[in-house]
Length: 239
Image (cartoon, rainbow, N blue to C red; front, side, top):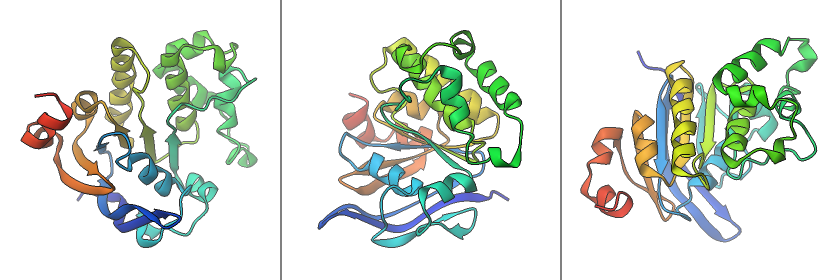
């Protein structure tokens, strides 16, 4: 039986008096890659930030592995197993690639667990990061910075990986390379929720998808079905 990792149940979020998410209901099962699609300003990043604990919930609930997390702090959610690679990458300035990765382990290092195996796994997934491990993170190319942001999220040993616009600002070939790695991560069994404007890339890796417009989910279903939906093809695929 499939186990549901994440559930957003009738979730409403507001910035001040302005409601930006209206009754969002979605779920992500163990081992799934789920895409959250929509135009800029649809509310996709707001939803990820709410799942991560960076926005308050006005009403509704968020459950992770069967337990409500809607009132937990963001650091408690990380400790439970939720990690996010944010939009814009947010590489820590003045730190090397390796230091950026190690910094993500501070929440569990007090248990004296070795990080060598985690670094090895990230470097195996992203060989360029290994080659540049002593290089300052901010000096990497855009694609390499995105790999570093994803690798940093993986260092916290998540059970749910949130990816916010991983193709943003990347040349097409680099975006494809990043998504090849996302496919590898999903194939290894990690549960992924990816927010993306590049509908073609996202639907190529996703098992299921939700389409968000003006803070509301207007379509959901298997990725292949969503891909061939006339509304999606016209609005997001250009045909």
